[in-house]
Image 1 (cartoon, rainbow, N blue to C red):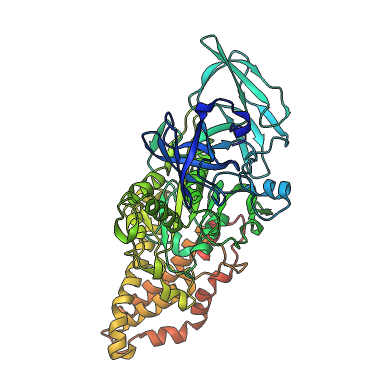
Image 2: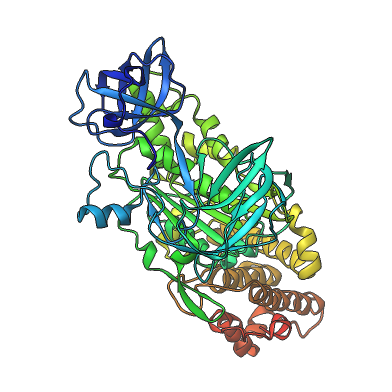
Length: 593
């Protein structure tokens, strides 16, 4: 962004077009022959950032990423000859960007205002901060190809930033910088290929709409553990490199689940895209405990904040900016999670732009290409073998929140999203009204990754798969019995059915329910989850066995007898979630929790 030409710098008339019409964020310009689709332009004397989205003769239609008030017919439009791109390098972690990667904190310091001035041109990554660069596995005469790691920068205590050769680069090393402190625009590497020398800084620029290349795509085989029992313990597991949708009405807890994933998931790097949601989120103040130390969550997070009062056109750009940042850290060999909150606001921006372009509307006024745009975003997730040496694997997991109006899952955005993603965590308004959080409906939610993870569970937690199946059966049976109970009452049920109802109640209230704001239950390690399940299902199996084996005898054992004689055990099962597992005693806790 910093190297874009400015109006005052250009003398060549052929790089200019002129504003022909203005309609909100959509500007039509004439004399734009020679322009390319998705080329970045500067509109008007305020040099507003825009992107060409349609070409017709010498007329270009531009979506402007800033407020267009004051732009008049005849104002100049400067072509840059570059697509919308992001800067990649040290300094991304801990930063807060807007949808087109302008650093909001730097703009605030520069303008001493809470508002972003029009046409502001600030580099995304600071040119004044000096980073400690250490070359690794490289010397003069070494042969390098795209994706090779040639150095390391310790960005902070949580993230080790690996310096990568750009994907299409190659050559023999003719210069490498000594260990020391450098800014992102100082040359740290020089290569030669076919007599042509190329200099590299710690900064890369990459077009946001173009996926970064990989060596090969790999099947997912490791779960994305969230610390939320309802997600980790059931048939709703996501994998590292998977795609997940969280549709739900307002107040169901989408943002709390997204923030819990950011804080407690087994991901190395988090990219959080606030796309058209409220600007009052307290995300930067959150902390996470790693290795006994309390650290700011921003040390492993980059925030792309494009709130609901920012220009709508930039919502689409913010999604692509976020996924490009995610792919960059994936190429270092990290497992990255990207949260998009919420993709419905992005779809609404598409609908508004489409309406101004007079395109044929489809369902509910959304454009016909809504599904294709959603797919082009979600398909950039996955687990991959990265380009270059040393060999490494990385992944990008996408979790997209969807806000259907009125919680209606037949909404076009929800419907199109569910056809693309592999995991569906459906939030239930009724559960939220009963203060059952996370309000994920365990009956309608699903995951298509269940079979892919069986090998992982068989190897590390052999009993887990059978426990998970039993839990699903109990909850499903309880749902079927609830109608009978409403008609004839609980007393007329068979003893085995009474046990099912009681254990289902125990599972729902003391296992699936979790308080994200408590110190003891905001995060549940997976081995504690398995231990809790083991104990609850153990009680269920033994109670069923006792009832069924004495059904024909005179001394029948009923659920009432079991409950009265095992009050203390039931209380301990209910209070398992309050217990903190002892660090370093995983094997013992796994069976005894």
